[in-house]
Image 1: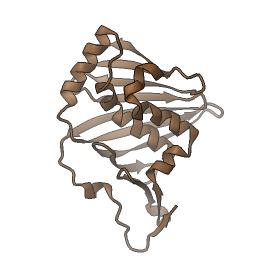
Image 2: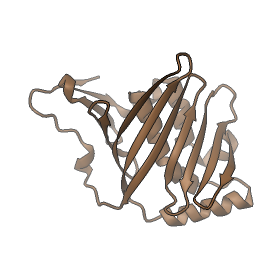
Image 3: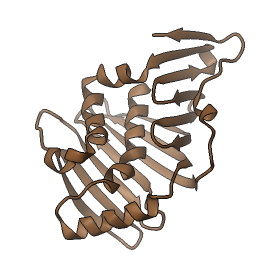
Length: 218
């Protein structure tokens, strides 16, 4: 669950990364410049998501749906509505995962969660090292329609075995879909019903334990 949530988080902040980069292709530079202008006033957002994870070894698929809230830079509130209720709170310092059915919440240091997983480190390297993006990643505009742009992102380091496709809607310049593939599994995400600049308080992204809920700090 957590690993897929972190991949999902990477998708959410991808358009901020794009806005700070120049790739040396005049057409892409122009597109990204327009995206940057449109998103310069975005402070926070809320939207619905649908995520499907496909495991290649078994061809098993799992699907989750829910709502997320995101505030620049590292504030996330994610509510998984199905197949079971789960809540995730990220405030830039900690990540709290709360499962009501288990009456338990697990609190971990955000930095440790990312750095202690090789695959997650490689994924978050994309979002954190945006100033070196052209050096570390091949990015191409795969497709353009009247509705959206589709980008393909591949690490130049062959040790990093993953690729990501990002679809950005032309109307609002926000991510509408993505597909992450690391050779072992694929995560497909669709995002819709954006609500922009809701003026969220930071308290929205902090967990307050209900009565009779065990809080475990790792």
